Length: 177
Length: 272
Image (cartoon, rainbow over all chains, first blue to last red; front, side, top):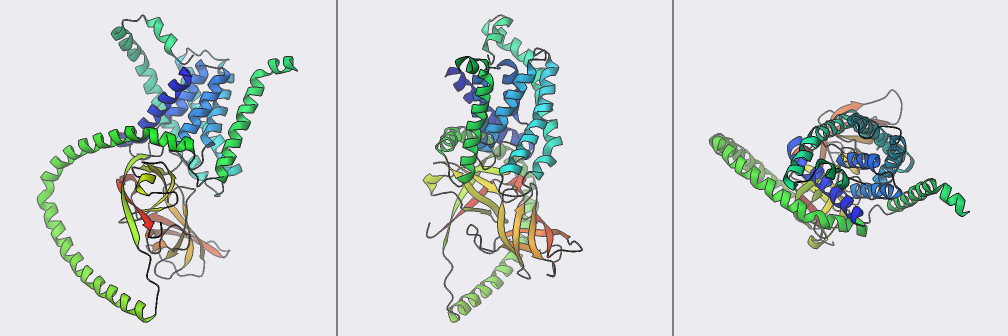
């Protein structure tokens, strides 16, 4: 329950950042998909069944603030989580490049799944076309976000540890396990 | 049996989760106009956060704009006075036309148009992803805003409300790919459907023999049951006429600059 709450709070914070704060700086049509990055990040650190459930909840949370139908992102995030968790086992998860590669593949997979779902279920024809057109831009934005996150992660860790007086190893216990 | 379940635990879990998620999605597809308790709850929960961010950003912007405005206020003043003179003259002409219209309507025993109540609202958030085109406004069911109400600005159509909580609502913009509006070309009354295409719109089902020019204004037809008649949607920016077929496809440039939207009006019919 505590973990679910933590996921929900983080998810809501990222969505608020994405929908109300970033548009002031990046404009109306430039937003990295922070929730996708969170799902990918958690899939590489938490491969349990509950993680898949949380990914679905995060997807549904995104549905509340995006698109017209509840559940579309739910399925997309759930499948991305399961695929990423399955494939991620083969990679060194501590390597920073893993997350960058996961973001590239995750973004393409998200678009492919969205297009598939809209083609199968959407009532309006061609509603998937704008999604495909936006892919290169979205890829660039998501990559920028993950690179920025990777660069800021270590200094942030040091900063938090210095202020809390914790040893650097303590941080790993508060991740998404 | 128990051993089989244990062996394929993760597969069974995955299949049941995907099935559950698909069931929820298919159920939501059937009830698109309905705002679920989950959606209402989350929208309600995040409303104070959005309110705080909106107030803070507005205050910061106001401080900055107050300074910038001061530096150009004289030139603006001269320009606005010129515009005001021009608009006054146009207003007088329009008042004459309106009077004539009232007289003619009375002569022809036309039913009076239903009165519309406009609810002003502020935009507090945009869509969470780049794939869809929706916005969130700071008015909800507490302010008599319900699903399916038209949302406009002075320049033209913005969209319609799709999900409403007590204090906030989401609006599907006309440029979203899921948006369709019954429309007509103002000068020759050609009917068609204005469809969103992400950044602009298209006007479908316009008969190919109709005379259409680039720059023609497209307005709402008032037959779709959501938008009142005569609200500008956009102007024709390109004409795509194939060698065969019944129709021509027209590309529209929206009258509204969606990247600069700040305030909107939600229209409510008198009956509502």
